[in-house]
Image (cartoon, rainbow, N blue to C red; front, side, top):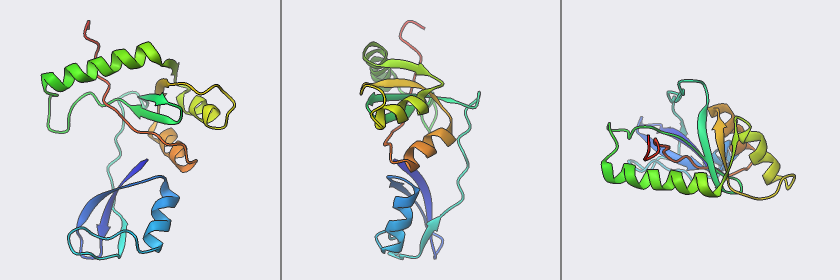
Length: 153
């Protein structure tokens, strides 16, 4: 899935999630995307500030073939509540226990799995925003999940 910030002709902004950029274009051209505030179907992508990771790449997790997600260390409003952090730490333990770490080759390995060139399995690793968008454009589904430090850290 790919996330876009959208804007209607009246200037209302809202979020939209699409399979890929082509999916967005097809839905807009078909009149399937409307502003939730005024109902206008004259909708376009708004300018979005890119999320740039500190080292240029983010951790990405795929728990099923073609399902991926990179790390987000903090909630949008600040620190992650303790109960949520505990759940995310448990999720990280399960991913590390049940999935293969593929490092910076995440996008390439996800593509190989998608095309049947590698065995289907859960994987996780690092990926840039550009790699993630390319995966979405290729029809390889992915989602992002928060990646918090381990319990023992």
